[in-house]
Length: 113
Length: 114
Image (cartoon, rainbow over all chains, first blue to last red; front, top):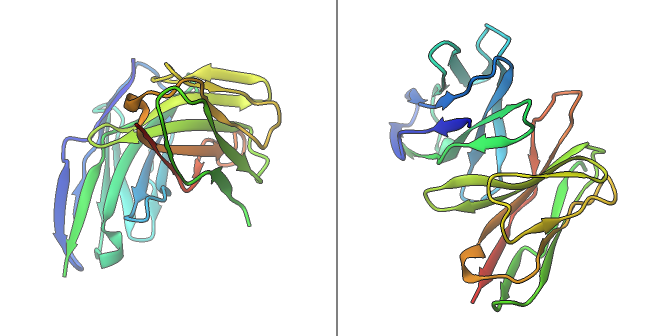
């Protein structure tokens, strides 16, 4: 069965600095999707970035980028120039041909002014 | 406005009293899903549906039922709620062709079972 692991329950970063959130997953499939979702205090779940496993190029969305290492089954999220509004829970998620979503347990990011 | 709506947003009920949480999307998405979120456990998928009349179990389906009679609606039914079903519930939908499986989430339903 597929699993997603976020080993950092909580992280802190100074405003304007860069932080990397870790995510590893386990699967025997070759084709799948990976996502990072943000959950601010409002509880709304917001898609941050997605990566298709067949694409070697790492996805980027403005200040957010990923480091996708398929062989190592690693999918980390880098947030550059951190802002106070980035403070939230971040969830890594996996989706494949089984049509099931698997989420990690989340990393709470604090941004220090 | 493209959105996923859930009702009610908050619900306090008693053990054994049947309840339904509604979910509706206006984006013509094929895929819909229900999750529960508990502290330290992240989001866990309860049920999902790939289209009308096609539903399947997620990782934690016990104690829940769903139906998909129309493409836009995907209600979650708790026939006999128990205190261990106290949780934050999210409905989500996603397309299967364009930007596949990027989920759009509802605002969440906070359920308390006493």
